[in-house]
Amino acid sequence: MNDRTTRSRGLGRGLSALMADVGPQEGDSGPRSADMNVPIEKIHPNRDQPRRQFQQEQLQELSDSIRARGVIQPLIVRPRPGNEGEFEIVAGERRWRASQLAQLHELPVIVREFNDTEVLEVAIIENIQRENLNAIEEAAGYRQLMDKFGHTQERLAEALGKSRSHIANLMRLLNLPESVMEYVRNGQLSAGHARALVTAEDPETLAHQIVRGGLSVREAERLAKKQAEGEKPRARQAAKPEKDADTRALEGDLSATLKMKVQIDHAAGGEGGKLTISYKDFEELDDLCRMLGAT
Image 1 (cartoon, one colour):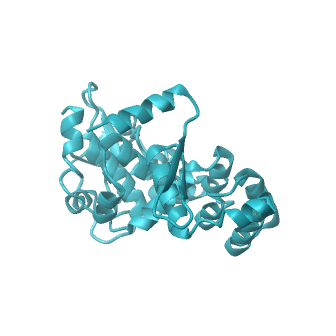
Image 2: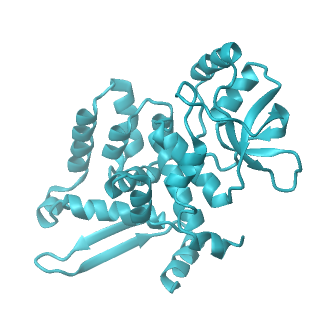
C-alpha cells in the first residue's frame, strides 16, 4: 500500500473494529484464545510504539504475575515484513517485556494483517485507553498520527472520543524545551504544570523552580504570570494589552500544527492584524513554503 492510499484511508477499518481485535488486558474477564504460541525471540517490538518509558517496578510486578499464572491475554502481532516466521508487536509490548523478565520461552499470540496505519492506531489507543502514557508520550502519539497519516485534530478527537481542546492542549506541550518535557516524562511535572509553561518566556527556569519547590499547578500558573509581567516594560504593557485566551490558544494550535513559533497580533480597534511565523533554519523555511504552496 502506497503512502497516498494509506493517507486516504482515514483511520483504517474504524477504531471500534481495531479495539475489538485488541480485546481485554491482563486481569480482565474473558481472555481470548491465541492463534498460536511463538518463541519469544521471534517477537519484536513495534518501532512506532508511542510509549518510550516502562517503569521497572511495574514490569517486575507483572513479571511476577506472569511467572505464577502465565500470560492470560495473548499479544496482538502481525507478520514481520521480510522475515518469515517472525512477528511485530501491535499490542502487548509491556507483557512481552515482563515475559522476558520471567524467562518465558514462548508467548501466545493473535495474528492480524494490520497495515502501518492500523498498527500505530492500536498501539496509541491501547495505551491511551489504559492510561499508560504520560502527557508527552500521548501528545507524541497524536503528532505521529497527524504527521504520518494526515489526520487532523478534529478527526482524531471524533475517532478517539477525546475533546479537540484536550488534543490541542497536549500537543502544545511538544513546543516546550526538551528538559521541560523530560520533567513531564519522569513524573516531576504534571500536564497541568507543563501547560502553564507553554507560553512562558523562560520555561526551563520556571520548570526548575516548580520542581525544586514542589509547587502546585495553581502556584505554577501564578509564577508564570509573574515572570511574564516582570519581563514586559511598563510602557509596552500600557500600549499593548495582554492577549486574550482565545488568541493564545490559536497561537498554540498553529504552532503545534506547523511545528514553528506563531505569533498573532490584532490591530487595536480593528479586525485586522499580523501573523508572524518564525523559522530556525532554511530547512524549516522550505517546509513552510511547501505547506503554503500545497493545494
